[in-house]
Image (cartoon, rainbow, N blue to C red; front, side, top):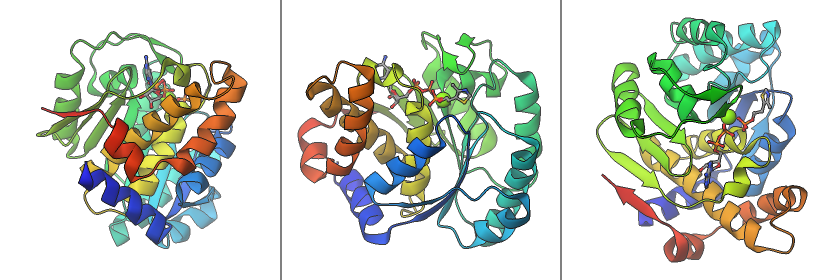
Length: 266
Ligand SMILES: Nc1ncnc2c1ncn2[C@@H]1O[C@H](COP(=O)(O)OP(=O)(O)O)[C@@H](O)[C@H]1O
Ligand SMILES: Cc1ncsc1CCOP(=O)(O)O
Ligand SMILES: [Mg+2]
């Protein structure tokens, strides 16, 4: 657990600058969740700024939830700029299980530079591997019995960290597999929980060289905050839960991690 505590301390100490090119449904939530954890968001998505801005950022967050033609070009340039300075890139392939052209775009994106972390729900992760998955639009309805094998395979094929969210989050570098057993189903009752944990993952990768530990920690912090938010007043109601989530993200500390963290390494 100490490695996760150290990852959290590094974010709060370094205030990593995260360039986010993300969807307009949850863009504000992603900016605020990064501020809540101690990072610094910049939703810089103009195509003629993305190449330069990526090179002054600590990490890049790309989320194709509602990607526009401007964002398509901006993401290519941001990945190219990040590759020049070896800056970590986190991709959330929202909806790729339901919209095949998104997988074609991601394959093009990977030709412009390295994707260091792919974070999606299990249906999206399976779709990237070309495995039949059960999705409903941007949501996964996959029971995930083969989730670990799929995540390891994709991590090895793409030489990246893969994080598949669900009741249990699966995080792997293709060799080691970490399971995050914290969380609450309430996180599925608000839009943006996946987007927000993707943004947090970029924040943690921007302050920690060990991207596996950083990705484990972002998912641990999100699920611990979710557990504490649902325990609060009216936390069983989606509107109250969502607001409390931002509060609880800012309150997660080493005690929370040591006392409540439920991690299993395979
Ligand atoms: N059934 C569940 N029980 C507890 N936590 C969950 C459950 N499903 C998802 N989560 C958590 O909710 C967050 C969003 O995951 P998910 O809903 O899979 O992403 P998306 O919103 O991209 O579909 C993650 O932190 C995940 O751990
Ligand atoms: C509903 C929706 N439609 C396009 S992007 C988006 C938000 C998806 O957020 P998340 O993947 O966190 O559920
Ligand atoms: Mg999602």
